[in-house]
Image (cartoon, rainbow, N blue to C red):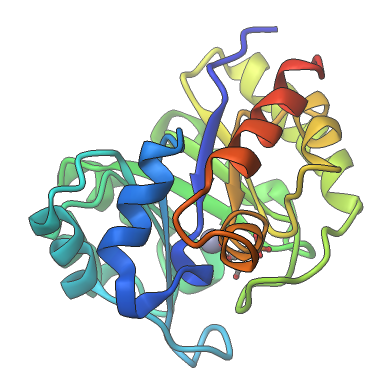
Length: 232
Ligand code: DX5
Ligand code: ZN
Protein backbone atom coordinates (compact mmCIF):
# COMPACT_ATOMS: atom_id res chain seq x y z
CA UNK A 1 0.00 0.00 0.00
CA UNK A 2 1.41 3.40 -0.97
CA UNK A 3 1.01 5.86 1.86
CA UNK A 4 1.63 9.56 1.89
CA UNK A 5 3.11 11.65 4.68
CA UNK A 6 0.63 12.28 7.45
CA UNK A 7 -0.73 15.81 7.54
CA UNK A 8 -2.34 17.45 10.58
CA UNK A 9 -4.91 20.09 9.68
CA UNK A 10 -6.27 22.13 12.61
CA UNK A 11 -9.83 23.27 11.96
CA UNK A 12 -10.03 26.98 12.69
CA UNK A 13 -13.72 26.54 13.49
CA UNK A 14 -12.59 26.06 17.11
CA UNK A 15 -10.04 28.90 17.08
CA UNK A 16 -10.50 32.26 18.79
CA UNK A 17 -11.82 34.26 15.83
CA UNK A 18 -10.99 37.58 17.47
CA UNK A 19 -7.30 36.54 17.23
CA UNK A 20 -7.47 34.40 14.11
CA UNK A 21 -4.17 35.38 12.46
CA UNK A 22 -2.25 34.77 15.67
CA UNK A 23 -4.06 31.47 16.31
CA UNK A 24 -3.17 30.20 12.83
CA UNK A 25 0.45 31.35 13.20
CA UNK A 26 0.68 29.55 16.54
CA UNK A 27 -0.66 26.18 15.33
CA UNK A 28 1.68 26.30 12.33
CA UNK A 29 4.67 27.16 14.55
CA UNK A 30 3.62 24.22 16.74
CA UNK A 31 3.96 21.88 13.76
CA UNK A 32 0.59 21.78 12.01
CA UNK A 33 0.83 21.16 8.25
CA UNK A 34 -2.30 22.70 6.82
CA UNK A 35 -5.13 25.05 7.80
CA UNK A 36 -8.62 23.49 7.65
CA UNK A 37 -11.13 26.20 6.76
CA UNK A 38 -14.81 25.34 7.34
CA UNK A 39 -17.33 27.25 5.23
CA UNK A 40 -20.98 26.93 6.33
CA UNK A 41 -24.03 28.64 4.85
CA UNK A 42 -26.94 28.11 7.29
CA UNK A 43 -28.67 26.26 4.45
CA UNK A 44 -26.76 23.12 3.53
CA UNK A 45 -25.72 22.90 7.20
CA UNK A 46 -27.34 24.60 10.21
CA UNK A 47 -24.49 26.99 10.96
CA UNK A 48 -22.88 30.05 9.41
CA UNK A 49 -19.16 30.74 9.32
CA UNK A 50 -16.60 32.40 7.09
CA UNK A 51 -16.01 33.11 3.40
CA UNK A 52 -13.31 34.14 0.90
CA UNK A 53 -12.58 37.45 2.65
CA UNK A 54 -11.25 35.60 5.69
CA UNK A 55 -9.17 33.26 3.52
CA UNK A 56 -7.67 36.27 1.76
CA UNK A 57 -7.04 37.96 5.11
CA UNK A 58 -5.03 34.94 6.30
CA UNK A 59 -2.91 35.06 3.13
CA UNK A 60 -2.36 38.80 3.58
CA UNK A 61 -1.43 38.13 7.20
CA UNK A 62 1.42 35.98 5.84
CA UNK A 63 0.10 32.43 6.06
CA UNK A 64 1.95 30.35 3.45
CA UNK A 65 0.82 26.85 4.55
CA UNK A 66 -1.82 25.12 2.41
CA UNK A 67 -5.38 26.25 3.16
CA UNK A 68 -7.86 23.38 2.95
CA UNK A 69 -11.26 24.93 2.21
CA UNK A 70 -14.15 22.63 3.18
CA UNK A 71 -17.34 23.93 1.56
CA UNK A 72 -20.48 22.98 3.45
CA UNK A 73 -22.65 25.10 1.18
CA UNK A 74 -25.19 24.70 -1.60
CA UNK A 75 -24.78 25.62 -4.41
CA UNK A 76 -20.99 25.59 -4.65
CA UNK A 77 -19.92 26.68 -8.15
CA UNK A 78 -20.46 30.44 -7.88
CA UNK A 79 -18.09 30.87 -4.94
CA UNK A 80 -15.25 28.58 -6.12
CA UNK A 81 -13.38 31.17 -8.24
CA UNK A 82 -13.59 33.60 -5.29
CA UNK A 83 -11.91 31.06 -2.98
CA UNK A 84 -9.25 30.32 -5.60
CA UNK A 85 -8.51 34.05 -5.89
CA UNK A 86 -8.45 34.30 -2.08
CA UNK A 87 -5.61 31.77 -1.87
CA UNK A 88 -7.29 28.40 -1.26
CA UNK A 89 -5.05 25.38 -1.88
CA UNK A 90 -7.60 22.58 -1.63
CA UNK A 91 -11.32 23.10 -2.23
CA UNK A 92 -13.58 20.24 -1.18
CA UNK A 93 -17.37 20.05 -1.45
CA UNK A 94 -20.21 17.67 -0.69
CA UNK A 95 -21.81 15.97 -3.73
CA UNK A 96 -25.21 17.01 -2.33
CA UNK A 97 -24.11 20.63 -2.79
CA UNK A 98 -23.51 20.41 -6.54
CA UNK A 99 -25.92 19.67 -9.39
CA UNK A 100 -22.98 18.48 -11.51
CA UNK A 101 -20.22 16.91 -9.47
CA UNK A 102 -17.88 16.26 -12.39
CA UNK A 103 -18.20 19.87 -13.59
CA UNK A 104 -17.52 21.27 -10.13
CA UNK A 105 -14.39 19.10 -9.73
CA UNK A 106 -13.11 20.35 -13.09
CA UNK A 107 -13.94 23.94 -12.17
CA UNK A 108 -11.80 23.68 -9.01
CA UNK A 109 -8.82 22.33 -10.96
CA UNK A 110 -9.30 24.89 -13.74
CA UNK A 111 -9.01 27.55 -11.04
CA UNK A 112 -5.60 26.15 -10.07
CA UNK A 113 -6.67 24.44 -6.84
CA UNK A 114 -6.70 20.82 -5.72
CA UNK A 115 -10.18 19.30 -5.74
CA UNK A 116 -11.89 17.03 -3.27
CA UNK A 117 -15.20 15.33 -2.58
CA UNK A 118 -16.65 15.08 0.94
CA UNK A 119 -18.85 12.25 2.17
CA UNK A 120 -21.23 12.63 5.10
CA UNK A 121 -21.63 9.65 7.43
CA UNK A 122 -24.72 8.44 5.53
CA UNK A 123 -23.56 9.37 2.02
CA UNK A 124 -22.57 6.35 -0.10
CA UNK A 125 -19.27 6.33 -1.96
CA UNK A 126 -20.91 5.83 -5.37
CA UNK A 127 -20.20 9.44 -6.38
CA UNK A 128 -16.52 8.54 -6.55
CA UNK A 129 -16.86 5.82 -9.15
CA UNK A 130 -16.46 7.86 -12.33
CA UNK A 131 -14.36 10.73 -11.00
CA UNK A 132 -11.36 9.08 -9.37
CA UNK A 133 -9.13 10.79 -11.94
CA UNK A 134 -10.57 14.20 -11.03
CA UNK A 135 -10.08 14.20 -7.24
CA UNK A 136 -6.94 15.11 -5.31
CA UNK A 137 -8.59 14.44 -1.95
CA UNK A 138 -11.39 12.35 -0.49
CA UNK A 139 -12.71 13.73 2.79
CA UNK A 140 -14.75 11.45 5.01
CA UNK A 141 -16.90 13.08 7.65
CA UNK A 142 -16.81 11.22 10.95
CA UNK A 143 -19.50 13.52 12.37
CA UNK A 144 -22.49 15.14 10.72
CA UNK A 145 -21.29 18.48 9.35
CA UNK A 146 -22.14 21.78 10.99
CA UNK A 147 -20.42 21.93 14.35
CA UNK A 148 -17.12 21.30 16.07
CA UNK A 149 -16.81 19.26 19.24
CA UNK A 150 -18.96 16.26 18.25
CA UNK A 151 -18.00 12.63 18.91
CA UNK A 152 -16.29 10.47 16.28
CA UNK A 153 -18.72 8.05 14.61
CA UNK A 154 -17.04 4.60 14.57
CA UNK A 155 -18.68 3.65 11.24
CA UNK A 156 -16.14 5.99 9.62
CA UNK A 157 -13.40 3.41 10.23
CA UNK A 158 -14.90 0.85 7.84
CA UNK A 159 -15.56 3.57 5.31
CA UNK A 160 -11.93 4.69 5.56
CA UNK A 161 -10.77 1.14 4.82
CA UNK A 162 -13.07 1.03 1.77
CA UNK A 163 -11.81 4.34 0.40
CA UNK A 164 -8.19 3.41 1.10
CA UNK A 165 -8.70 0.33 -1.05
CA UNK A 166 -10.36 2.35 -3.84
CA UNK A 167 -7.51 4.87 -3.83
CA UNK A 168 -4.85 2.18 -3.87
CA UNK A 169 -6.58 0.31 -6.68
CA UNK A 170 -6.90 3.51 -8.71
CA UNK A 171 -3.17 4.19 -8.56
CA UNK A 172 -4.02 7.91 -8.39
CA UNK A 173 -2.35 10.48 -6.18
CA UNK A 174 -5.22 11.13 -3.76
CA UNK A 175 -5.21 12.20 -0.11
CA UNK A 176 -7.62 10.55 2.33
CA UNK A 177 -8.76 13.04 4.94
CA UNK A 178 -10.90 12.50 8.04
CA UNK A 179 -12.91 15.25 9.73
CA UNK A 180 -14.81 15.16 13.01
CA UNK A 181 -14.06 14.02 16.53
CA UNK A 182 -10.37 13.29 15.90
CA UNK A 183 -8.52 13.18 19.24
CA UNK A 184 -5.25 11.91 20.67
CA UNK A 185 -6.99 8.72 21.84
CA UNK A 186 -8.45 7.72 18.44
CA UNK A 187 -6.07 9.14 15.80
CA UNK A 188 -3.99 5.94 15.87
CA UNK A 189 -6.97 3.75 14.92
CA UNK A 190 -8.02 6.28 12.28
CA UNK A 191 -4.53 6.18 10.80
CA UNK A 192 -4.52 2.39 10.87
CA UNK A 193 -7.80 2.41 8.89
CA UNK A 194 -6.11 4.33 6.08
CA UNK A 195 -6.37 8.09 6.64
CA UNK A 196 -3.33 10.25 5.86
CA UNK A 197 -4.78 13.71 6.55
CA UNK A 198 -6.29 14.51 9.93
CA UNK A 199 -8.56 17.45 10.72
CA UNK A 200 -8.76 18.31 14.41
CA UNK A 201 -10.59 21.34 15.73
CA UNK A 202 -11.62 21.10 19.36
CA UNK A 203 -8.80 18.61 20.12
CA UNK A 204 -6.19 21.21 19.19
CA UNK A 205 -7.71 24.61 19.91
CA UNK A 206 -9.78 23.43 22.88
CA UNK A 207 -6.88 21.72 24.60
CA UNK A 208 -4.54 24.66 24.27
CA UNK A 209 -7.09 27.31 25.21
CA UNK A 210 -7.78 25.41 28.40
CA UNK A 211 -4.13 25.74 29.40
CA UNK A 212 -1.82 28.19 27.68
CA UNK A 213 -3.47 29.98 24.73
CA UNK A 214 -0.18 30.17 22.87
CA UNK A 215 1.06 26.63 23.36
CA UNK A 216 -0.22 24.11 20.83
CA UNK A 217 3.00 22.10 20.85
CA UNK A 218 1.96 19.47 23.35
CA UNK A 219 -1.28 18.42 21.68
CA UNK A 220 0.20 18.40 18.16
CA UNK A 221 3.19 16.39 19.42
CA UNK A 222 0.83 13.94 21.13
CA UNK A 223 -1.15 13.50 17.88
CA UNK A 224 2.12 12.91 15.97
CA UNK A 225 3.32 10.37 18.52
CA UNK A 226 0.10 8.40 18.12
CA UNK A 227 0.53 8.52 14.33
CA UNK A 228 4.11 7.30 14.58
CA UNK A 229 3.04 4.44 16.86
CA UNK A 230 0.24 3.17 14.59
CA UNK A 231 0.63 1.37 11.30
CA UNK A 232 -1.60 0.83 8.30
C1 DX5 B 1 -17.63 20.00 11.14
C2 DX5 B 1 -16.38 20.55 10.53
C3 DX5 B 1 -15.14 20.15 11.20
C4 DX5 B 1 -15.03 20.57 12.64
C5 DX5 B 1 -14.29 19.48 13.35
O1 DX5 B 1 -18.71 20.26 10.32
O2 DX5 B 1 -16.28 20.17 9.16
O3 DX5 B 1 -13.97 20.54 10.46
O4 DX5 B 1 -14.35 21.78 12.85
O5 DX5 B 1 -14.27 19.77 14.69
P1 DX5 B 1 -13.83 18.70 15.78
O6 DX5 B 1 -12.42 18.31 15.46
O7 DX5 B 1 -13.98 19.46 17.05
O8 DX5 B 1 -14.79 17.55 15.65
ZN1 ZN C 1 -14.34 20.51 8.08
